[in-house]
Length: 512
Figure 1 (cartoon, rainbow, N blue to C red):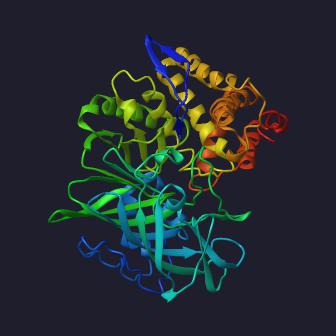
Figure 2: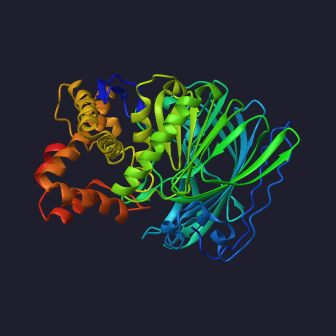
């Protein structure tokens, strides 16, 4: 994620680049019950859903063509993630674009080594300025009485009986969302403003269960919102025909129904599902090495959108060579009125309208940074609330590598000066890079996570040696793809490549 901030200019080959804050399991199991996509919370003015239920099958994932959304090198992961959560979601968007009703069915498998007596889901709209009301919550078809906490942003479903490791359950529920008509909270990730609907984290999301147990907290206003495992999504959107839709994954079907449209998306493996809609969107498209790039924005912003697609295409090439190939066959950008310069989602990136204006100095760094998040946050996940450096600092360092590869030493020196400038604005304080978001002030978060944290990787490279360092970054990404990275996993990977002890370096830079 990129947030607003001031930057020193980067002078590269007579072009100035002024950076702001770099912004911000396929299911192959017996299915013991039909998974239906139904909605009992329809707005009276909307037509009844025509969504067909997902048929019963011994291989749920086999009913959908998720492989077409992945480049060939990654398609074997569909077998490797056989226990990932599978979401079937229906959104019905009202004509006003800020009331959304829907239903969701989740096939959830216990992938832990302990029994689970409850399942926890996040209801993020309730802490993002909106309102999410739940109904008809069931486990394996039986009505349950849930508990709510964390300002109604946590839904706890007590299970009829504990589920053992590798056992599965089916959860179903309906919901009604009122989307905030402002961008005041958490950068406006969930909002209807300026004739654009940004529908982020707008469905009940299974919380991550790890060595700490269920991860559930109210995220700070600074930083990203979610911590999520890889999942698969089949999402149907019933929306006004006037709105152009952009959703995660691939659009696999579309039907016009008078003044309405029904569009189905398949996305996975991904860590989230995101949707944007606006009657003002035009679509600009580019194809690069088997990947389709799209930018959804207003027609008068075409020049900025075309330049952004150029930068994204080059970023995919650079990061694909340095880390691993980009996994999906599509990468979509949408412009929104977010207060952040950019916000990452799996296979999608939201960019604030304003930096697409002519002569804006922040666009190139923002696009490179947000594209880097497709590797650091999505392909290799992390706890974005407790370990923000593992995606934000790495994405900043990746942006430094973009400017190095694209512009040579002038680009490298120019972007490095913005990293140093960030850190200098808090007096070059030796605040640890590896703290949770909530432990930093706003200025410290910018200076440490987006400045000092990226510069750490230069010190790491110097101690390891360039060749060992480049091998380490590549192995870290490829060995942890589709999983969750941690500070210790990253440190161990680096030490394995250099055959050295990096404890002192991590103590000086990372550890509290």
